[in-house]
Length: 171
Image (cartoon, rainbow, N blue to C red; front, side, top):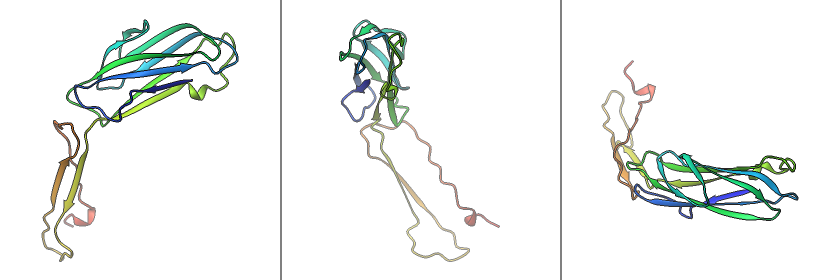
């Protein structure tokens, strides 16, 4: 099995984040040819990793472990920085663990993947009002749209779409 966390719920541009990748052999046989693959999310840049990882294909980072004994647990770390400007609302980092199946097929492969999902600190809120409680046919209506940034991250740009319902278009 594998578990992954960075112990933070959100990140902002410039943050450095260290992910803990913990994997355990819960089987009844030693696992051989174990490969742990961590794919950093878009918008993050690889900084470093522990325990002789292979970062030559960063943002994909791998660790090759010759064997993992029954009940053995290892924890590796990978560090990344959050790029500016922030380009995503969520940073989803996934990791998988697998072996060469030399000692049998994993009976519970569903626990061989783990993700860590951090929000970006961008929290835009949109309100729209016309200030009216009733309208009269053929009268013009003016709407006020307000966008508020409730998050700690400065938003460089955004796109707002406000399509009118078909009933409001001229016949």
